[in-house]
Amino acid sequence: MRVLKVIIFVFTLLCVACEEVPENENPNNNPNNSVKTDSISYPEKVILGNNVLALKDSSILVSDDAYELGAVLGKDANLKLVITNLSTYPSGEMGPIWFFDMESQGWMINDYNESSNYQVLTSTSTGKIYAVISFDGFGYQGECRIDFYENSDTITQSKYYFWE
Image (cartoon, rainbow, N blue to C red; front, side, top):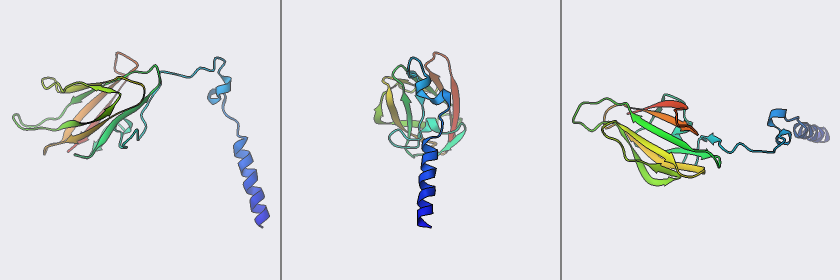
């Protein structure tokens, strides 16, 4: 019985190892053997985890939790994010906002524009880039939109996030 299990196991390994790779995924089918160098991905974790950019549109964030704005950029890629505060709250009160930790890599983070309620982040390097961010509602529901400019001067996607 034990021999039969070993034979089945080895056979299964051989089948998996010999599985055919589709032509469009086989790097040997690329005559120039080129790699896409302007790629951008948003893994769930770059350094900290809880990557906001990897979350689904309309995700709900927890106030005061540490998140990251992280991406992995190919050598010719560039990324700009515009975070717009869409929160409503009574005039004269402290309303929902986000804060950046001092720890960041590969981002130029502009000051928050108080008159237009937005902030711009621009990639300054390639590879893994991240910024640590937290959100605070100050007793109100926060809402923001992040516009992505992926290798482009125009918006390539937008996502909304909420917190309280």
